[in-house]
Picture 1 (cartoon, rainbow, N blue to C red):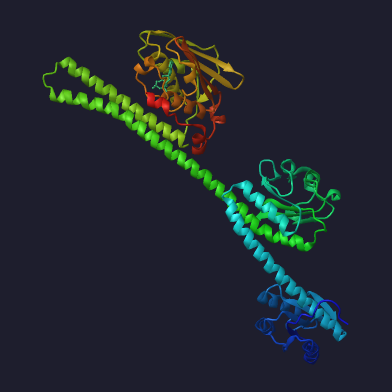
Picture 2 (spheres, rainbow, N blue to C red; picture 1 turned 135 degrees about the vertical axis):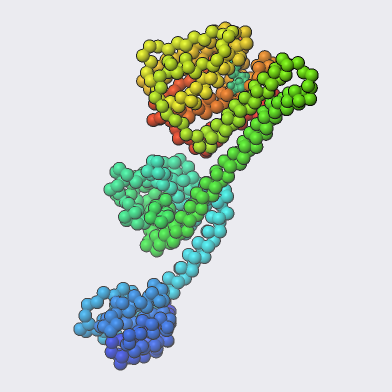
Length: 558
Ligand code: ADP
């Protein structure tokens, strides 16, 4: 007597080593309503089975030509793993390894065969329905994930967390992502049914003590219905999240595990079917997480490019302005010399000297512009050399120090340093040049060297000139920044020198600063590592762009 659900009927193919026996079984099944075909044994058997597209294959274990194991494998390859397989084991059949859903002894009761066939067909229908349902759900989820991508990580993780709870009817859901620096899977905001504080505490270590616990790479997904007592789980999950039942599946990208999906707690225990559901979702969720990563990366790159583009336009506009002024002067003087043949010789020479000075200025501006671009874009390569600061400072002093006295103060046996001499000369020329320029009344300028700790040297350039108002000190090392005061702006300058000095000193792994009081004078200082070649950062365009901001108002005033 068969109790329970209504019989399922389906398409059955029988391949028996004893054809007569196969026919007898077919009669039993046909009387139960199944559509049955009995195939003759042949070398083409696997192909014949595939052509019949059955729901269920009944095959006897004693089949040798072809061997039953490879026959089942070939049939499933052709029809999918869904094909139900019932193996008939007769007396005296050899032991063979077959991937079957069930086995049945022969000769058995006809009713038993009927029951087994019906339950296998039923299971297959259930499986199909479930698969369809999962596919439908995933399709729905995928659409909503795509929409939440633009909302950023919180929105997407919130979505994934809720849906991974929903799909297995759990009360809690969470996405954990691998953090390469901390070597931990970290809980992501937002979660579903879990407080933000608990999420912040949710972590799954990969190393240390956790090595002896569940390893997703080796052990695959995890199902635990007694999470608090389960020693496979680390307490950072079970205790911090206060969960009793846990399903966890890895989010994988190729061989890499990017994170975990967690669903936890419900009225009834989790089953393998729940685990499979969550696994199906994890495949799609991993794609969504990867898309988010790419999306965010693209957004960052785009922002950076926009910033770079804006800087470039500003830079070009300003440089065009700075080039135009001297060019107009050069053109004007040349015209005068050409068109006024009666100019006295001395005036003509004076004009030509001005033209030469303006041309030199232009060459410097062009070089500065080029150097800035190269350093900003990370293309500039410093040339590290060992150098003795005492003789170097003497030699690096600008010429023609008529109204000023310059004092170089460097302790004896000062250690050698490794730096780029040409670029360091440029910084010193600029700082000392400024000290002279912005001390129009003359006076003394001190250059002082000292050691700071074991690994740094400090060089300071001290003047007693115009000084700088406090509120403008903060901007001074930015591009084109000039002090906005009548006295300062009377003195010609581009506002690039200090910016270049900063780029060079930071390129050495050092720092540059200024202390100043208006009307009293300024001290520009820099600290350089003793071995810049070993510690200097390898600058990238991104770093440079992220550090700097482009001043606007200063420039307008100058
Ligand atoms: P430039 O001197 O060509 O304008 P810098 O970048 O070297 O460009 O200097 C930026 C601004 O900082 C100068 O325009 C000036 O206003 C101010 N400054 C620099 N050095 C001094 C100094 N020693 N004393 C007073 N002001 C200074």
